[in-house]
Structures are given as C-alpha cells and as structure tokens.
Image (cartoon, rainbow, N blue to C red; front, side, top):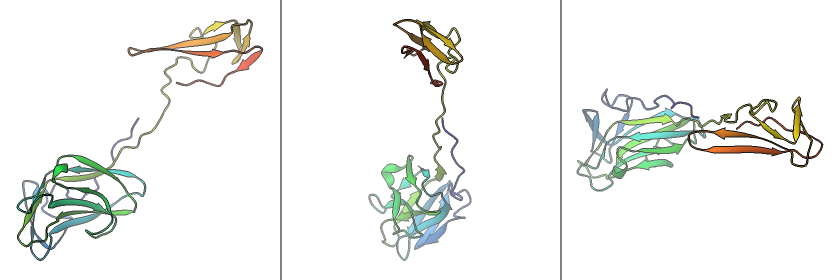
Length: 209
C-alpha cells in the first residue's frame, strides 16, 4: 500500500511565469513555450532556488528537456545540492542523457537547493531546460491483507479439524494425527495453511495472512 505523492516543491518549475521564483546568476535567461534557455555572460549561467524538505525523506526529481545547446556534451546540468551553491554537496545530478526521466534523492537538510546550469563557463554559450518537478515519494505502508478467511476464529467450518476439537480458541488433540487447516484460494494460486496440534491442549494466536 502507498500513500500519495507529496505536493509540488518547486516554484514555477514549468516556467509558465518566466523565471519567477528562480535566482539567476552569471548570465541571462529567456523563456519560450515552457523552455528556459541560459546564456553565459560573466561565467556559467545558473538558475537556482531552495525548497523545503524533511530529513530522511525520499524525493523524486521529474525531468523534462535537458539540452546542451552549443555548449558541448554534458554541458547542461541539473544539480540538487545541500547548500545554496552550485559547488555544494551533490545529492543527485542530471545531464542530457537523463532528459524526460525521473531520479530520486534523500534529503539531508530542512532546505535543499536545485541548480540549472551550464557546466561550461565560456561566454555566449547556451543550454536549455524543460519543466522540472520535485515531490516527496509515496511512503510504502504495510497492512495485513487477511487472505485467510476466519483467521481469527478456528470454530468455523472454514477450518478442517482432524483428531482435535476446538473450544474458546483452544484446540485439544483427540488422536495421534491432530491438525487444523484452511485453504487460501485465488485466481493465481491455492495455498493450504496447516497447524499441527500436539498432544494435550494447544492455544494458537490469531493468524492473519
């Protein structure tokens, strides 16, 4: 069982409102059709922002376009880092081969940062990025499926008893081959659960499968 994905954590990750919510450094940014293009000026161009995370939780980075433009192989870079610096400790990094895919990372701080950057620092070089999303990954929770009918009540006909009797949850052997069994049946399999009853009286805990 899983709970749902968390809310969107990136502000204006689809660039529908230009570069609002992002911090631009080292160059210029232009947006067209939800694609942002960075052009180096004084050094590498970067767009960045911080977002709130919970330490130990896992997050999914959903990537759109990652285009190297005229900057060369693996120039377009997306980094999720621990501190507000492109050179900060990297939690996950994506380049053009990761376009239109998803990556995951585990948060180590209450605030995590994302950088879109040109890994090349040559003036005039460009890279482009499509929509980006970060959301908390659904938590996987376990709950009993209770596939075995009447697993909390051995007195019902769902249980086959051999050489034994049941009273108030206690099974008493009346012969040398004492057991109680029930069968789980589905379209995929048939499984028989059997409990051996030793001589005398045996008490079994609830069985939930």
